[in-house]
Length: 425
Image (cartoon, rainbow, N blue to C red; front, side):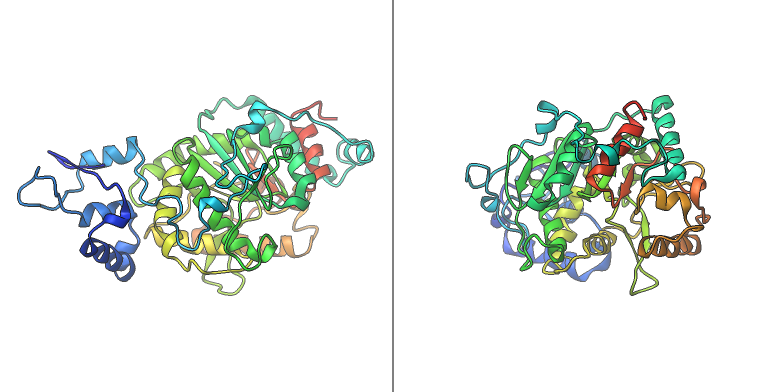
């Protein structure tokens, strides 16, 4: 429902849009760079003419304060389920009982929480004294500071967060660990998988990738996840975090960051979107960058809506391969002429989104940890050169309000949980 000063225009079915309007939108969206960088909602407002007799001879609908109010207060979706470019239709989602068009319950863990358990075969590994496990003394010290921060912070955390995790049926050990630890702290949760199972919480969400649910199918799998979130949950959540099943998410700190004035002011600014993560330098093109998928990236409701209605449909939709973070970031940059991400560092310049386990960040660069810390070092120098972010390491690198660590095993997730929430020992 698009409002001007005197009347409304209701667009009910995009297939019934007159051909001249569709052509105008297509040309504007694909051939004009300034139009391409604007949200589809703005494009629709610019090209639709009033047809209900409320204006003067079909005058152009203005982008007034009234239309901006409508955009803030209600969500008008421009893409109907099943009409996404190169995304399987909803009927392809098969439920646990074979039903087509299945939509999972995003609050399944809130309604049926799983208790924290330690299998006896892993007890010795998980229950080592603090600093004696894989986290090392330096990593334990960092986790202890994070716990102290969470327990003493008075900052607001009043946002609704959806956590979308891509996995497969072979990842049940990890998704079970997520369910017993950080997963139940999310307001909504998705385990996008190759089957639906009420016991594990997995949801069958196929893509059009010829590589199916393998790592090489990640670009199309992530596109499908974003379309599924848009179709079913856009109205119900403020932010959406997308990551793999080897991530430990500190939900309280992530919510606090997303509820901050910095993020709110950024997302409320026309032409800017709350899209956050850790900036990596492109491994092939040195002047390019992307938000790393390791720790996951987070986008606002506004970002998800405009991304799905714009770049998801038009930005290389047939692309295939494993590098979903590069693909999503490159397409996200089509949304705006402004900086495409919000700075996720804390007030003293320490980082929140981590691409490695805590012990790697706590000891690098004194200790090298292979490709992970190699890429980290390159990224920090790139950010210093392009954005002026000071290079920091160890204690100065790991924020007390950290939100995510990557490359975390199921056993390590439980160990992190003990240090951050349980008795600490």
